[in-house]
Length: 544
Image (tube, rainbow, N blue to C red; front, side, top):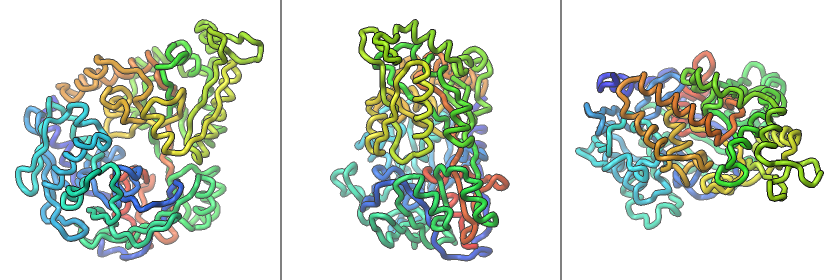
């Protein structure tokens, strides 16, 4: 049974990460990292900067380490469910301060979560809009009690996604969604804005950081690049220390340039899919979606367009290598044909759906005679995915389907996916402590309009109920049964086409900086664009 004792053993993992003691390392130095954007502006609002400052200026309450299974307490020191799983009490560390010296207490936590209620755009996991929590209150300076509308053992996993903000600053802000927070007051390791330029931003040490002796580094320097092709030469030249982007032929172009200091590690990450808008014809036809899946040679796409770094994903149930232990063998056996490269079958399905070449131009038309053609959205500058989408289009052309690459700026991509303003788009899936949260992002109706992954149009009250039942399940066997049903639902409806399991892009140089997670010391998944994982790595890095 999933009783309180077992839950507590999962929750109360020790706050231990790999690394050496502060007394054993050099203090000082600057870490230089690349960011793909159009330049930096004076905006330090963590909810409107695409997590740029999360884990740097702002600390999460807790970090769930999907690589080791540990729970790393950050601003919180513990969390405990009530026996009936209807309340969660979070204890804060004692004596913490904000970077301006003001006390950081439970009142700040309550204010921060209430802020996401009054500003729905900040409710990143839908805990208010989805009716997950009833209230949040401080019972003393260091204790916060979340009262849930119903028992839910998964609620705690949402905590790391919400930013804890200083009440004494943000309570006077009239419009939090447009507030740029020009003089940030934070709790993270780097809160001092040393300088800000269009192409560079440097954040330096928090004078009141709550972990003694941390961070070892003095500053983090962010450098703006337009795309991956600009990052590669900068990484090779040693201008940046930490790369988190696709690098073509990394062994030859990066490692061989300095074998003593240049390294990479690409552990499994999120599953990458082609999301389809099933609310628009002909994507509302299951046969069309199945055909577009079977038209693709995933292994060739991985080998040619992605240089062999990802792993082809033949699981039609919605998850990939990151959750290998959760993949249902029964679902794979029953629906595995949907991911086989079979263009003959794809042609049969497209014909059966009434999509035929009516004007002799070599491309299929809709039943009413209009051309069947669509764009596949991808972010401008994401060179690896652009190559993947180009190759997808070539396979579709072989079955008479005209699909074009449409590169867009991040802001357009972000809005299009959330508002279902696309025909097809390449996109990732949520990386979480447990795949139930990934399915929640895919299908929970509360996530529609706020998630990049829920705009495909395949939703139902029954699936909402199934997802919600996971947190109330009595044992692990019951939870497994729920995950298996969700995989079957995904395969049966195919709202997105699985392509591959993305690697975690991670290149690093030890010429100046040490303390990196490695295959030999995998203390955390090396994801730059995840504030929780990022802060743990920042606390371990130090001068060589």
